[in-house]
Image (cartoon, rainbow, N blue to C red):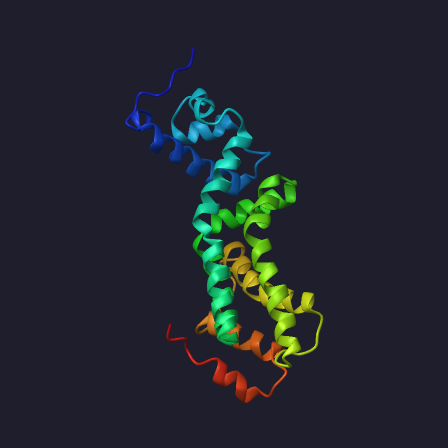
Amino acid sequence: MTTEPTSSVSRLPADERRQQLIDIATQLFAQRGFNATTTREIARAAGVNEAIIFRFFPHKDDLYRAILEQKSADARTDALIDTLRDLAARGDDAGVIRTIVRRIIDRHCCNPEFLRLMLHSSLEGHSLAREYRERHFAPLLGFLFEYIPARQREGRFQAAPPAALVRAILGIPAHHGLVEVLMPDAATVPGDAVEIYTAFILKGLLAGPAPSVRTQLEPSRD
């Protein structure tokens, strides 16, 4: 009968052991996907018996659920939406776009394993990607689909389909993150990518002349 290895790792307190298993599972799922990663491989990487995993997570899906819950707690989506609403109420369109661009780039580039995990989850049709989108992407979409038509009614943004403008806003920083994570040898963006993308997106959104864009792009002092 196989027993748990008698190492310092095996004597971790329960809460630290649980976190260790989540971290290792995240790494392996990000590398190989959910379907191709077994609990035995996770146990081997953690230096424990497979039974230890089942003590904390009766099913492999429970590990995915734990990852989702942890990342959801880290996302602080409510705070992001509150910030965006405040910027929009003050008429700070550059601040709105800058905040969204920075958030997407930071989330992708500072947490590449989770980005890879989400891509695997989407390709495999696993519920993790769908649930994360519902919790954190849907509120951002909801904000943008209120914000853009409101600006269009004011004559501030060009009269284009809101869905197209939403995709443009989100697509540029998302592509940047994908390139940084999946193609690290690609040419880097010179200068401040957040400000470059903010200027580009805002110029495409605004119905007015370019000088108003430069005014809008004055660094936020908040």
